Image 1: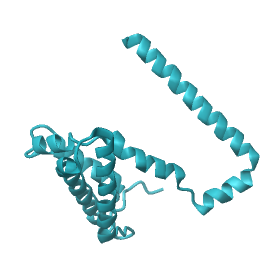
Image 2 (image 1 turned 135 degrees about the horizontal axis):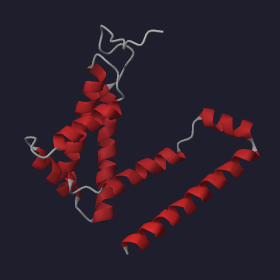
Image 3 (image 1 turned 135 degrees about the vertical axis):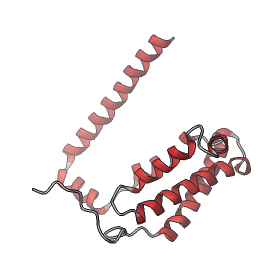
Image 4 (image 1 turned 120 degrees about the vertical axis):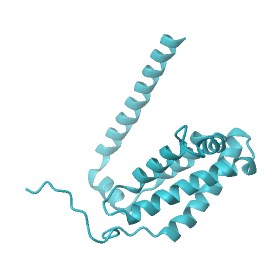
Length: 163
């Protein structure tokens, strides 16, 4: 068994990130996120726009790196790395980025994405559910109930300790 990491000669081999398509889709997501941020925090979209532009730019840079690097890492890793570097205190421009992004509420922006992810079911998932039958419903209810009760217990303990 060969334990060496294979680095391809052509950086984009096996990876086809359509940057133009992603850029347009990200613009739509940014617009929706600005509205969500406005509703949740009462910060106007024009006031939050510089922060959203920073997030957009960091995401595009991360996607470009993911497409052209000679080794594979998921694009979310590259995007995170770019964002971390851009916001490290002492890095030129980090203070500006941190101030601009500080006007965004990440929970407000994540809620629509998480809701969509929860509702997005594929044909394969429906096939699995049909094959599993009623048993999967019982398991799902038990998991949701257990997760909820576990969260309540942890929250109660933390509130008792800190309160």
